[in-house]
Length: 134
Image 1 (cartoon, rainbow, N blue to C red):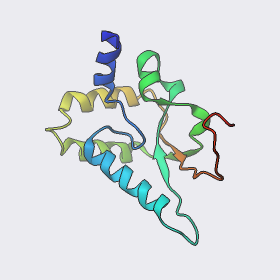
Image 2 (cartoon, one colour):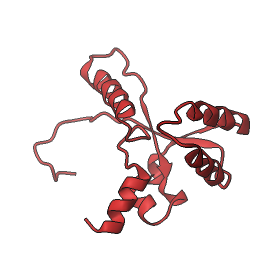
Image 3 (cartoon, rainbow, N blue to C red):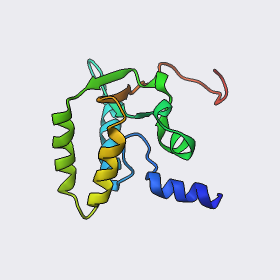
Image 4 (spheres, one colour):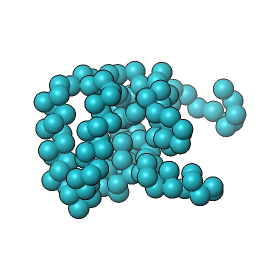
């Protein structure tokens, strides 16, 4: 892997579904997803994954953290007050998220819409015997 890409991977904290690569977040995401797919539900519960629109990112950040906009089909608005409350909550985790990081988030978010972007979990609708059969 090229060194600048590796630095971007570390900086961006590459994540699978769940919005964070922090092991606690990944454990919750994996466990909830497993519960949804392992049960025979009368009505399968709605399950959503957070995503950052790729169109709002560039370069390595777009490749490592972005989700194609058309996959983010649910958009939840929030107020500036809600955002400040979220930052205050994050500040409680100073050992994981230093104050400078919160300020970078605040500055970056000032240029974005107050929306949380989500994509729904989509369970397979059939079976296939071919990985390349579309």
